[in-house]
Image (cartoon, rainbow over all chains, first blue to last red; front, side, top):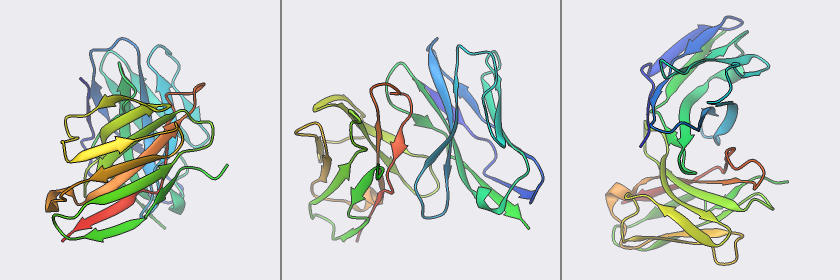
Amino acid sequence: AQTVTQSQPEMSVQEAETVTLSCTYDTSESDYYLFWYKQPPSRQMILVIRQEAYKQQNATENRFSVNFQKAAKSFSLKISDSQLGDAAMYFCACQGGSEKLVFGKGTKLTVNP
Amino acid sequence: DTGVSQDPRHKITKRGQNVTFRCDPISEHNRLYWYRQTLGQGPEFLTYFQNEAQLEKSRLLSDRFSAERPKGSFSTLEIQRTEQGDSAMYLCASSSPDYAYEQYFGPGTRLTVT
């Protein structure tokens, strides 16, 4: 079984600044994937970034990057040069041992102009 | 490619009624997933199909819930004898054979049971 914990219910950032969203997870699987999904208000979930657990290099997608600390079971998301369109709920998720995604409770990100 | 579509987008029903939702995955995606999301929570897994075979079901999926994917294309999720606790957003996702770990979500069906 897997668990995913997001300890920050809400975060805010000034436009153009950098923000880091935290996520910790627990899994007994040796082979697993970690994800960050974005859910804008009244819109569908969008995959932001993924990390394969066997890869040591942190994943990067444009302004989004992760800090994957396998031993600590930590998987944080850094958003650089924040934009108004980044405002959304962000969910951390883990997939391992089966096809299902296990999600955290989410972090609501507000971007202030 | 039009993405994952779900129908209806909103459904209001009275307690005790049956409801059915439909999900059309991205074409050529052989895996299809159903999740339920309640207010303030992350999505919770319900069930998963590979082609027409239902391979995994959550304990959340009580005997009032049934899902089908008869020809390995679209899927339906039926809830019988709805209860107020069934009020939630029902999300569908699909993934391809080559990238099974990347799930693409639809817009969801919001169910309100009165």
